[in-house]
Image (cartoon, rainbow, N blue to C red):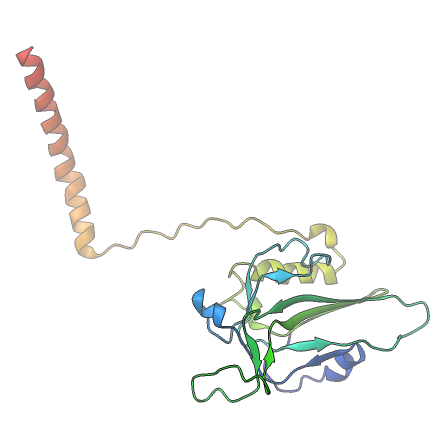
Amino acid sequence: MVDGTEPTGLEPLLKEHGITFLDGVVIDPVSRLLGGGVTSPLVSQYDKDHPITSRMGSTASFFPDARAMKLEQVEHRGHGKRQMRSVLFKGATQGWLETGALDQGQVEFTPDKDMKGPVTLGVAIHEEKQRLVVIGDADFAANAYVNAVGNSDLFLNAVRWLAEDENFIAIKPKQVTDAGLVITPTGGMLLSWGLMLFGPLLLAGIGIMIWMRRKRL
């Protein structure tokens, strides 16, 4: 999981597998409609054939300040070795890879400079007993974002696949959490008076109406 544009030291290893990170910032206007920022691309389409993402369906994932990458063909790495290379997911279907500066606060797609989405954000390599998953973001698994829609499922599935525990890969149902009731002091006082005063008065009034009706009969 790679964050930022600083060199990680892994670039030569990734290049051997045909993985190269692209310069620029991924822009996704759709994320703003769902409460995210335009630099947090949304992913809802995954590789249906790979164990990591085959059960994700249309579950959405967010990747704050993600880096785009490209997966290219590489020369055969050895006799008898079978290499499986997969683009796990792409993001910013309605967005682009912005190569200009963001200091002016507004960005727009420039056809001759920017790359139109969707852009690749995650890949997987499987060669004999070697497995590699590369994701252009680490924040999606941080405490602030891991519980956002499909982020935790995607992260755990990737870890289980790397550990060769495909049988444990599954999309767990989201637990319904009690959000609690937020009420002002005034509202709390009115609620208390309502329970202690208006409730008994209402019951007393209903009792009197029933008694008067029976008396008339």
